Length: 314
Length: 253
Image (cartoon, rainbow over all chains, first blue to last red; front, side, top):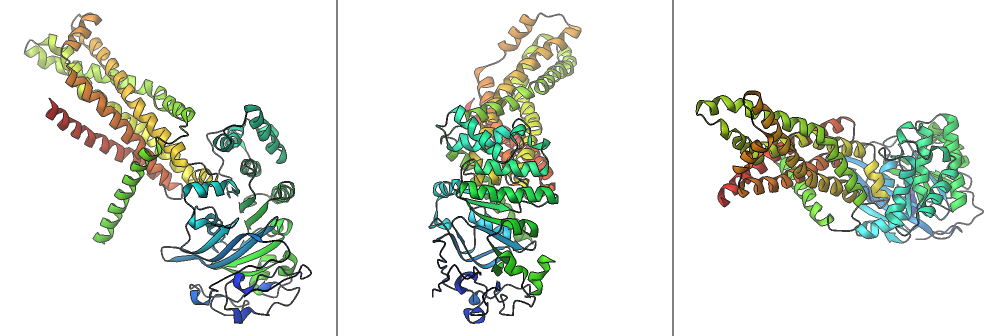
């Protein structure tokens, strides 16, 4: 079941198969042009109602989600029917998602909605219970350890707390991935690559500092530089502005856009920081109770009448 | 309740065995991270020399002083060097060194890797396609396996010197005479198994310290728990290996 969208449609509306939290009948044709695509709640209730905390019925999930091209080329990340639970706690309840090449996709949601678990599944840090994650056409769950590592080199991951190696200086933090993956790289080339990355994030002066001496914003920038040093094609940002003051957060958001333009990277940005989402997002997906709840551009979602969506904007 | 506890125990035991077995799979695979191994050897070996040396010295002094009255009663003062050397080299030196290392190095590894786990540094390695087991666990375990035997030999020598100093409090003897007398009572079967078992001590201290830290749960409390349980488990493992080594040596001799 394929549905074509053209570029004139302002809504980056996912087909029913990919938004994936409601039976097709319940969502089909509900989003008028210019309005966000708010999918029905997992239990089939309307988007405006608060869905129950219980697990959505898996039978309501689309069985064969299939993203369509919307003039941006084929999606490079396709997630279909992803489920993940920890003991009795269901974290992801049938997530369907796709990301196009060169796109910044922001995933918004309140704490505990499964955003971080979703991107951890994408790099193999968590194993999904059910569903598929295809990146560059390869199903992550079917890769062996070496194949997964080859894939990981193409995916950058910026952790919420930057996760800098605290026993190494900034220079060593950046040199470490190069030493592991670019064994033939000369010392001079390594040094110039490190300087280029530090220059990108505006922190060349911090090259010999230890991570403990860096501020929160500086750590984020160094973390970004370290992630970008392997030139990934996809970046996953886990709450990149959390814990930063407004100005620093804005700086990080602008840096994300700058890096996207400079290196033509596709990104998924997990956040609940609306100013950051406004700066960075080409498209926004909102997650609620482990499933995609709504999607659209920032402006479209801002205009929504849905109380839950509105709670993010005011 | 009991069955749940049993299940947890067997699950943890199986997990630890799998973790240990992975060492032998990873240790022969390149890249060998020589730089990190040397750095860990420096931390484990060189940074422990003062503590091990001081402990060894006290051990030798105490042993010589404590045994002197009994030996004097039997007119066997001249046997003190031999008694000190056999006790120290066969048993006390390796075991005390291993226990000190379990406390100093095992706890450091548990806390370091636990902290890295909690702050997602291990995950950061994983997502950068760097094998954290090989970089963190193999290097540290190799370092302890190589350094603990050297530290034990060092502790033995210092302990013998301590014994010599203690003997000179009441009796006059030269350093050369003391060492000749000490070596005279040693046989191959005293030295060789003692050195061999220190490799096992070193390996078990490293792997348990790393296991506890590597598998720390999220949260800062788990770092303390990892460090603490690393010391307890590796100390216990040292005594168990010592017991097995004593049995094996007894069978051989």
